[in-house]
Image (cartoon, rainbow, N blue to C red; front, side, top):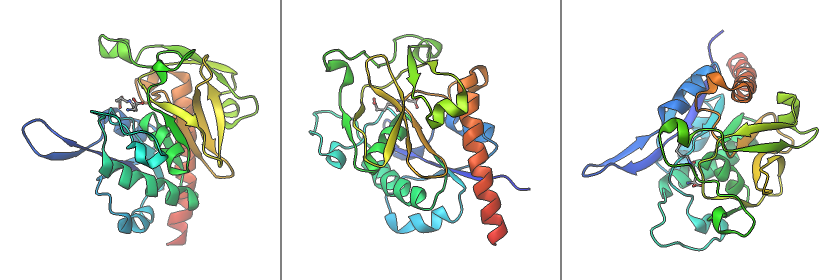
Length: 250
Ligand SMILES: N[C@@H](CCC(=O)NCCCC(=O)O)C(=O)O
């Protein structure tokens, strides 16, 4: 049996004194491999006319984190001065997510990717979670990569939800490297986990095969983390099922 193809949409970044590059962090590529897939990077061309054809060639969609933020116009947020945005990534991922879910293609969103899933379906974002009264500071700690991606807080898994069923535990510890977060969850999404301050840390799309989003980073050193391994295995299994169905149809 051949392996499922996992599409990974890129960021489009201007590299200093250079040109635009279409990029995805290597840890996400390794996570797609660990899920049993063949990673396929999708450039951030923002050309919606190519989406239907892209979706005939992939069996899963892995949405990565990024330092860039989704342009607030996509959720009626306010334009911030010096906000680091990536409009071509937004123009690629937002329609891609809607089309993938409509076709029941498995989707796994991580950090910015989770925020994209919420915004794609009409949800909104809090643009600076740490500035809200009573909220934790969800931004990364200064220091080495291991400190930045180190354990940050616990999450409470929703009883009976997909995440709790997959993991079999009601709490977990996660890392945290974001300053934005879900404000209003889109209507077709359901909460899967909360942070101690009530921030939504994970959600899934209702009534679909596998479309899960997490605000933390399971791709970071996934081999050492039972929850990350569980998530990648579940995503991989869903992609394999989709691949089998796609190959049998040809
Ligand atoms: N910019 C958004 C999303 C944060 C995010 O995805 N961080 C990832 C950092 C880089 C990586 O590990 O891929 C926000 O700040 O909320």
